[in-house]
Amino acid sequence: MNRIIFIGLTLITAFGCADSGSEEQTANSQETSQPSVDGSPYLLNAEPDGVLEVLAAREAAEDGAEIVVEGRIGGSVDPWIEGRAAFTIVDNSLKSCSDIPGDKCGKPWDYCCETTKLPTATALVKVVDDDGELIKAGAKQLLNVKALSTVVVTGKAKRDEEGNLTVLATGVFVKKL
Image (cartoon, rainbow, N blue to C red; front, side, top):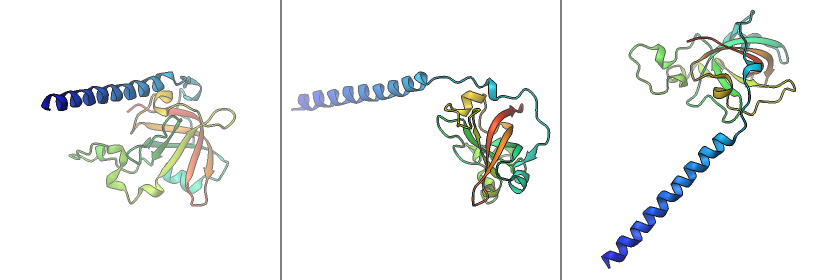
């Protein structure tokens, strides 16, 4: 009887491992089978003039107006829109956890020490093509950026009824950290 139980457990374990391996392989093949998009047309070689911080841009930008905004990528545990060239930026006046001496936060880009200020100090950035369509590639790979990278984006302001700001970006300048 013990022998039958042992064989049964061995088979379950073997099939369980095979299944998880195939899921992992499928996820990896999906990642590598996605078409790569050249980010160079969207990357600016020099910082543009007329830069506004996120707070000032949220205050001044009119819907459809050309705008230049600077901020740091972050504002949540996951500031990225998966598989799309879109992310949130935070006004430079806010401190990420990594800006606070001694803070050992594992995800400092979520600005958990500034949560009460975040709703009015963030903007959504969507990198768009010449037709205004969102680029279908992850922003991290497309622009070679990471959470807490400081970026300057150029594009058109899009406002919603609540006053939230989205920048339909046609250019991104990545500042060195």
